[in-house]
Length: 156
Image 1 (cartoon, rainbow, N blue to C red):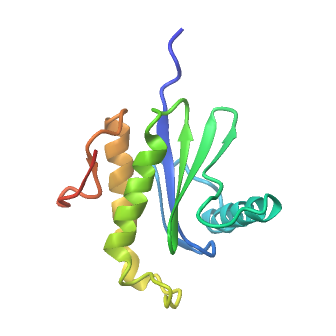
Image 2: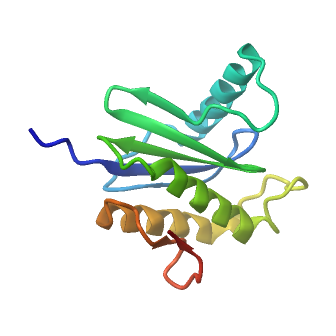
C-alpha cells in the first residue's frame, strides 16, 4: 500500500517572542487564529526548554500529532514553523532551516534585536512564504527550491 502523499500546508514566520511576522497557507487551509498559534508555538518551545533545563542552541524542533507534523526552525531572532501532513522526505527539516536562514539574511535589516514590532515593511514576506509553499508542492523532494524566483541562492 503506497504511503500518503505529504504536503507542506502552512508556514508561519515568527519573531522569537511569538509575534507573527508573516503567514501563508495553501488552498485556504489554515489555522483559525495564527497569531495565537504563533505565541503558543513559542510558549511550548520555551516550556520544554525550561522543563528539560536545556541551554544553548538546543530547542524543540518538531511536534507530531497523527499524520500532522509541525517543524520549527529558529534563525534568531526569527523562527519558521511549517505544518506538514503525510510522511515528508527526511530532509524537510533541513530545507526549512535553510529557508529560515535565507529569510533572516534577507530581512534582518528590518527584523533585528531593535525591531519595534511594525510589520509595515514586511509586505513582501508573505509573498515569499506563498512562493515557497507553491514550489514545495510541485517538488516533493524539495530539491533546488529557491527563496524566490530571482534569488541566486538555491536550497540544495
